[in-house]
Amino acid sequence: MTEQFGTEMAVERRSILSAMLKGAKRCCPNCGERRLFTSFVKIAPTCTHCGIKFSDYRADDGPAYFTIFVVGHIIIPAMLVVEQAYSPPNWVHMALWLPLTVLLSLAFLPLIKGAVVGLQWALDVKSDDQR
Image (tube, rainbow, N blue to C red):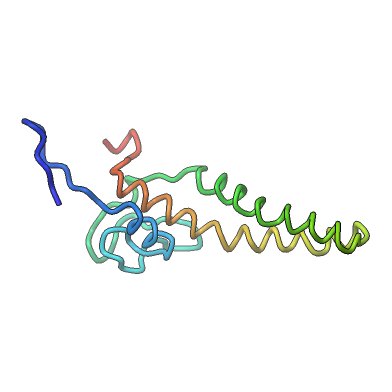
């Protein structure tokens, strides 16, 4: 869908939710082809299907901060519930929560990074050196 605003160029409206969901599934936010990453969290330079340049959209540290936020909101309440219910020794907490924190972080990071790139694409937010 495009709209015309006076003498400005036509602006294409992109679905933010759709782009973020496609990105979270590690797919291109435009065409949905499964080629957003070349490795664990390394963004592909372009989409091999529709040709969008992913290098224009830099997620930087945002996905790491959001991942810490999400994982922290899962681990801390669970840790407090276990402490209140069972009062295990400290070594049990260390053996349980440290690996779980690492695993959740590794699981959520690519999902969140894909969603952030999808959001940037939907809002057409490019890095300063790409404008």
